[in-house]
Amino acid sequence: MASLPVSLPQGVMALPSAAAPSPDAQAKARANAVDFEAMFLSTMFSHMFTSTDGDGPFGGGGAGGVWRSFLGDEYAKSFAKAGGIGLADSVYRSLIAQQEARGAQKGSQ
Image 1 (cartoon, one colour):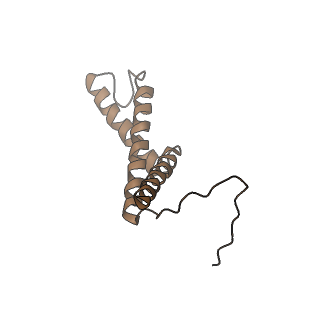
Image 2 (image 1 turned 45 degrees about the vertical axis):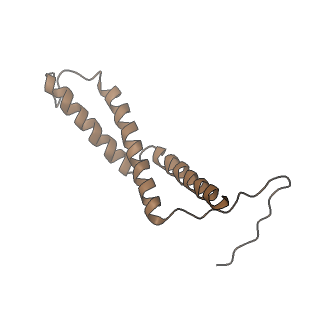
Image 3 (image 1 turned 60 degrees about the horizontal axis):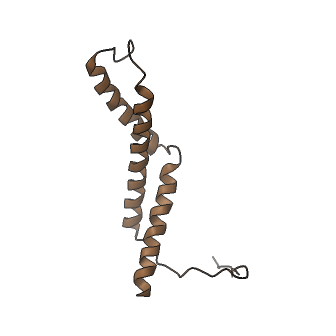
C-alpha cells in the first residue's frame, strides 16, 4: 500500500517521529487502561448500590454489603472487558501518546 504525501497547513510544525511502543508495551497499556476503567466503574457501582438495602438477593444483613461490593466489582470488570463506557480507550490512547513522547525525548538526547 503506497503512502500518500501529507502537507501540513502553514504555521503547523510536524511532531518528531517517534517509534511506536512495542507490542508488549501496547498490551500492558491496554490491560492497565481496562483495569482503570473497571476500578472507576466499581466506584460508580458502589455509590449506586449504597442506597440499596432490604429485601433482594442479599437481604438486609451485614454480610449483604460485603457480597454487594463483590457483585459491583464483578459487574465493573465485565463491563470494562465488554467495552465499558469508552474510558479505557481514552486512557489507552493517552498512555501510548506518553510512551511515544518519552521515546522521542530519549531519541533526541
